[in-house]
Image 1 (cartoon, rainbow, N blue to C red):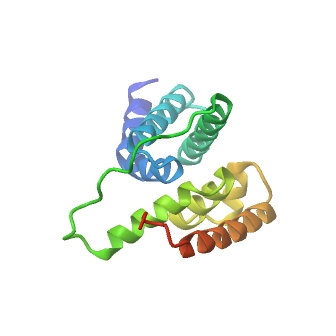
Image 2 (cartoon, rainbow, N blue to C red; image 1 turned 90 degrees about the vertical axis):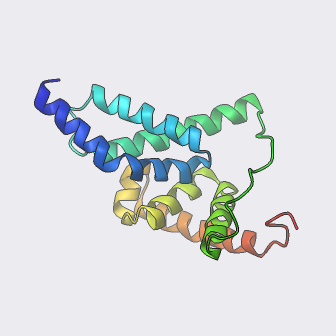
Length: 165
């Protein structure tokens, strides 16, 4: 890569890495895994920088695909995550923090594609057309997955054992 392209890549990372990290975290629910996803996606982008027309869409697609691979690998290996969720933030934070954690926990209980559709639609605020292109499906599939995912979230939110009480 020539110095101008290298600088352009650095600006892209500086401007978008935090948003990409938030997306990856919403998909996988683990900060360290999210950092690994973003780092891997950016490494893949670096190798194809000259060829990629829309770097952000490319990185999102790589993050999603890599996370799906992790889910599948975990299913094949029959691994089950263990351990308790770490203690939450100090109680001086607003109730919104608790709500955000509840939503993230609920998102982790959705099917991978449903989770991806909700994260991309409501967290990343992407239109259905872009989500469909990113996930390699039709806009109708995006709509139906979003509808089913929201219904499932409502059901999960009504379960009395959300916080273990």
